[in-house]
Amino acid sequence: MIAGATRWDILTGDITRCATDAIVNAANSSLLGGGGVDGAIHRAAGPQLLAECRTLGGCPTGEARITAGYRLPARHVIHTVGPVWRGGDHGEPELLASCYRMSLALARDHQLRSIAFPAISTGVYAFPKEQAARIAAATVQAELQVGRDSFDSILFVCFDESTAALYEEAVGKLLD
Ligand code: AR6
Image (cartoon, rainbow, N blue to C red; front, side, top):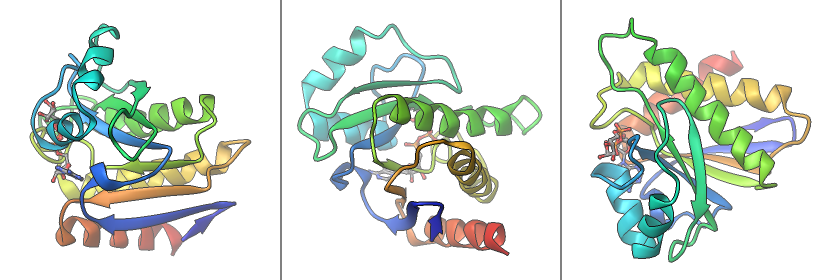
């Protein structure tokens, strides 16, 4: 798919293998590591990532912070904190959209051209996957339209085929 000058793709696989300018981490507000994709990113990046994260003083839900990528093939990690799903009427959709917007804003500020996103909040934080895919696709598309500059490439990196299929569907609906 192409939006403006930006190519976006949906991939199935392990985001720690992505050699993009930045990969996005679905972190928690301590930024001190955890399970899921967060654990995988810290394992692959090595202990220097945790050392830099300790200097950041955490991150509120819906916001994002940037670090180096250390041993990762990606140059940077953008850590964002998705909402915990509590039924959907506690601002979860808006907070999830904010994660995508704030991550792209940080990437822009640092002149990064390629960014890979995991399916934020859809694991331990239990956000319904289909709704999360729709929010991810719609928010990224809207940001690409308003952004004065553009990215070369945005990747949605899904851990399994069924999540990737939900993204394909969400993006397909946007293009209808
Ligand atoms: N590459 C791509 N996607 C992955 C990978 C990977 N290596 N590993 C898991 N996923 P989760 P959350 C997918 O639970 O729901 C952590 O403990 C996974 O299948 O990692 O935002 C943090 O420290 C799912 O679709 O993040 C927080 O405490 C998606 O990544 C909490 O979990 C997100 O699942 C954050 O929960």
